[in-house]
Length: 342
Image (cartoon, rainbow, N blue to C red; front, top):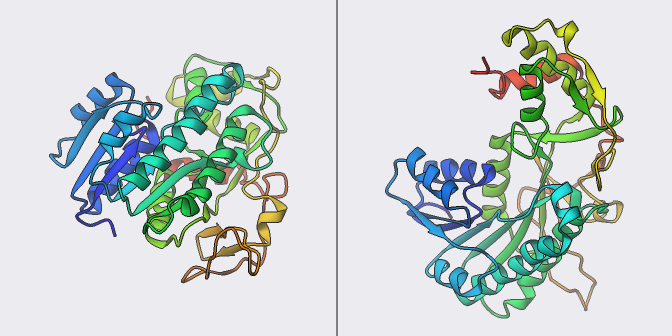
């Protein structure tokens, strides 16, 4: 599916976009078009990647004309461009709608008009029973992507969604913040000791996206099976690992509880209870099939090869068995978080 193809990554200058660039180049794609409204980010990518298969396109998904031109002769679209920070979206809801909903609709329309083969939208677990603006716009985005399969008419294009938890060491996770606070000698700021989150690695992310590209029949939501972490335990594990490397005694690094931010939730969910009734799974992934009704289904769907009915889904970090501190330390070390920290 990917070999020799032309792939467009929207928001390609972000951390997920970077990871996808590396993965796609390994998959022997023909061309990767990196589309972003951040000119310095594109410039840095050009300096970091020495590969003549990459094209750097400045543009914004709010601009229908620019997006249409960028999508000419594209086979696969990976849509990562979004406003992703909960607090910023909460303070700027009109802008979040323009980017995360209207911009996504532009992507859907442009992909249909360009006869693209596959579109994968990167959503968030915050779209499940959303409690904030960011999650609400992501849920609407999922609905638009599913609708794209009908909106396309008789064109042979498939739209699918992937839901992420927190990507370890990404700019949206707490890990870079905690590391910097430990470097400065503390305190490490914790919004609430009850907070729990799902985490996945960049390898998990790229596996999830490529699996969705290759396996979608149209309209599914793919989710990687992820470990759950109590954020207070994550903070303690990072203190144990990093404080000595930064010349501090772990006992001297305090944890300060500062209170929940606007729109922040205690726990995260990967699926609603209703969605579990349509969920299938394989060894590493869940897939929520689109809702259908016999004779009048919104979409028809015959199931996914290699997936079977999900027997038990841990929907929320509130229900999940969280990693111990030693398991968290091992998780961090196995995924390179502790390398090159001093």
